[in-house]
Image 1 (tube, one colour):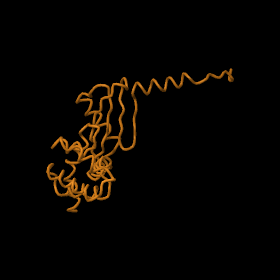
Image 2: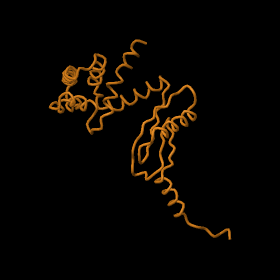
Image 3: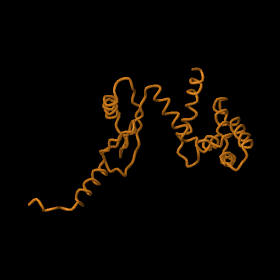
Image 4: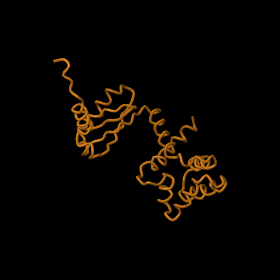
Length: 185
């Protein structure tokens, strides 16, 4: 149980990795934030042609400069030793999913054209809470996507409710393109 609580304490660091919206890996984004001149060193640690000992040494240096906790440093070292640093994004996302499931939280992503006002957001949370059921808490995340033209898309627990204008227009187009048969007349 103590190990689980220590691992849960690393979530803020791992979620920092995920929050940045750069094309670099989370490790390189975090390290670049502490020292931008060493981004090449981070990419170097992900290269499998580099010996594991060299990758581990680089990770230790990066962890020391970034002031990572021992748990995070050791985790990154294990990934470096086993050539798995390139999977850190998916590992961190999955870890957050498991932690949220353990806490009884469900992440719902709502995509709209404009931000949802707070009152509507609360109504949506209540509606999703009714759908999901008691004992679980809804964590709502908003995404803005002008390409959906209007309406909204709600994604949670491997379910998608798409009531966007873009989807409705596609459905209408598909319906109108179907050939008309006059056999029944």
